[in-house]
Image (tube, rainbow, N blue to C red; front, top):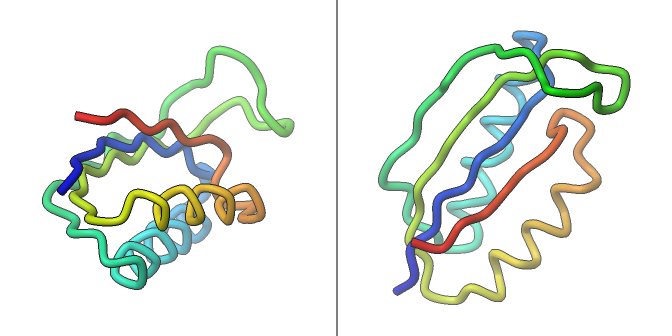
Length: 92
């Protein structure tokens, strides 16, 4: 089983980042990922504007997953979600 830490930068508006967190958790369960740690780091200023946004809501998760190819598919889907500004995956 592989472990990953994934950092998400979400739309800073309350409703948008709550919707994005729900989306992420729902898809983790669909792909068979075990979410064993999550941390909401709050709203922070971005180093540079992304999609005309100067702030972002930072959300970090740690997961375990058997089939990493499903995680790759999920990452491709993230690009179509407007509530998720950026994400970065690190294998632990």
